[in-house]
Length: 145
Picture 1 (cartoon, rainbow, N blue to C red):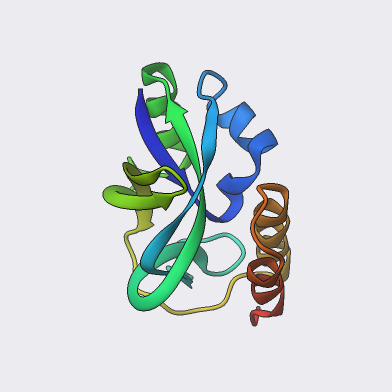
Picture 2 (cartoon, one colour; picture 1 turned 120 degrees about the horizontal axis):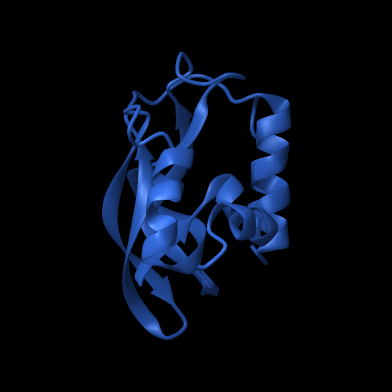
């Protein structure tokens, strides 16, 4: 099993059950020194897509999943790895048990552009369902779209 740090829409455990049915949720944590942003507006169907970028004094809430080998390919297909939309990247996630190495998907595109209101709402709802702090969820809901 490999550890995957989900952010944005993949914070929704019900959604992840469909995308990676053999991969249990392990817990939550934070990517310190990163921020959630959007980019690749031309790649999306409804505006810019979620990604993360390095940013001192920022953090991104994540859900950690033990991804079973049989789910890795389906996750890569869903995230558009073969279409060069996203790529995998290694990060260190801060949890209550210490730091955990994990992989994430980052956008193969430039930062910029706005997400659709529907997409941003899904991301905020997913963060809320995953147990993100109220102020983090409210910050997501207030973002421009």
